[in-house]
Image: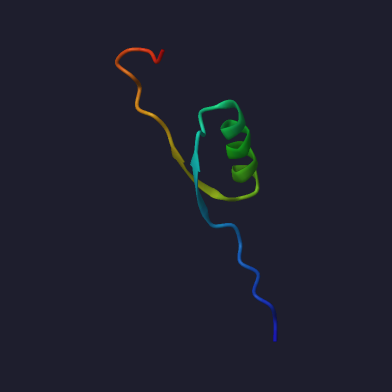
Length: 48
């Protein structure tokens, strides 16, 4: 019987617009993963 090895699927990533999250996003997509990235809505006024 042959072994079934699942391929990359879909992953949810928070913080994808940040430094570390951006790096993780690039690594995941390069490995063939589909990524759903959560981002914050553009603020009306900048964060303090």
